[in-house]
Image (cartoon, rainbow, N blue to C red; front, side):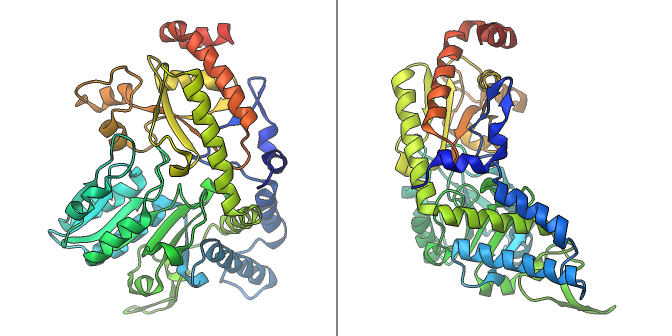
Length: 443
C-alpha cells in the first residue's frame, strides 16, 4: 500500500485554500486532479518537442510522433491489450461511445433489432446508442436496478434475447459506485451472439483492468478521471471487430491515398484519429497511466475500499436518521463513490455549504437522470409518490450529493467532512430559509 500523505505532495492544487480553508477534493468521479508528473510531461512536450505528428521528416515531428505512438503502447500495457494498435485515442468516453454507435451501430443494427443498456448508465453511454437505434428503427431495452443499487441479474435472460445485437453498460456506476458483474453480462450476451461494450469511465481508474480476461468486445474510458488531461480517452476493441468498422470522423491522418474516385484508409488505430490529435493530452495520459502503474492498481483499489468503509461507518454512526445513503453499503461492492442526501436539505444547498468549508463535492443528477428517478433519489422524506411529469419540477426535486475519493484522499479529510456535516445539520432550519446567510453566520 502507498501512503496517501506522500502521494499528496505530487499534486500542487491540493495546497490551495478555498475561502481560507485547505481544499478537500471529493469530486474525483467528475475529474481527478493532476500530479506534477503529468503536468511536467505536457510542459516538456510543448517546451522541447512541439510539432505535428505523422506529417514531417524533421526532428521535432519525428520526436512528437514517437512520443505519441509510445503513449498508445503505455495505455495498451495499462489495460493489458494484445497490441498497441487496438488502442484508439479519443477525447473521452462520450467520444468513444459516439464513434462506436456511428460505426458499428449504423453498420449492424436493423429494424426490430435490440440494443440493451441499463437504467444506471451515464447519459454518455445511453444516448449515442438510443440515437442510432432511433435512426435504424431498433428497440432499446434496459436492465433494471434493485432497490439496493445492484443490477437485476435475474432478468438478464428476459431482457437479452435472440434479437439483441449489442449490450452496452457501465462497469461501475458513477452515482452509486456499484461495480457490475461484467462476466455475467458477457456470458448472457455470448449466448445470443450479441457484442458487449463496456463503459469503463468509473472502472479503469479504480480497479485493475485486463481486457484479455474481461471478455468484452469494446471498452471505453476517459483520461481526466485517472489523473490525465481533459480531452483524452481510449476506445479499446478486439482487433477483428475494429478492422470491420467503417470510419466515423474522416480527414487528415486517416488516409493512405485519396483520388477523386477512391479513398484508401490507414491501418489501425490512425484511421479513427482524424485530424491533428490532442498530442499533449495523449502524452499526458500516458504519464498518468505510468504513475498509476507505479502505485499499483491493486493498491489503488485497496486504498479506496479503506476510505469508503470508513466514510460509510462514520456516516451511519453520526447521522443514522439525518442522512440517506444510496447504493451498496459494502466497500467491496463499490468504487470510491458515495451518494447521499441530508433529509430536508436540497442537495445544492448541502454542496454550497460544504464548499464554504473548502470541501468540493458534486451535486445534482450526475448525468444519470433515469437512475435518480427509478430509485426516487431525493432529499424529500418520504420521496414523492408520483414522479413529476415536468422536467423543471423533476430537477427541483431529484438529485443527490456525491462524494468520491481517489489516491490522495485521507481519513483525516473524512473526519473533517463529518465535522462540517454536523454543523450543516445543526443549521438545517436556517439553511432551509436562507442558505447563504446561514452558512456565513454559522461557519
